[in-house]
Amino acid sequence: MDSTLREFLRQGNTVISNLVLKNYKKLGMTDT
Image (tube, rainbow, N blue to C red; front, side, top):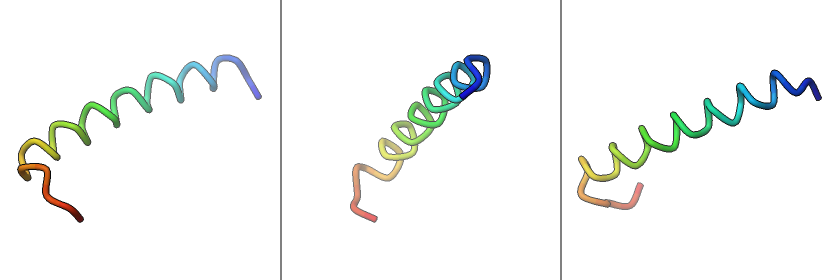
């Protein structure tokens, strides 16, 4: 796997994780 792509995915996953955490806080940690 390309190291550049791997680093991009790592950064992307961090951004997505942060967005998910923010959305969970908005929803009041309700189960989906």
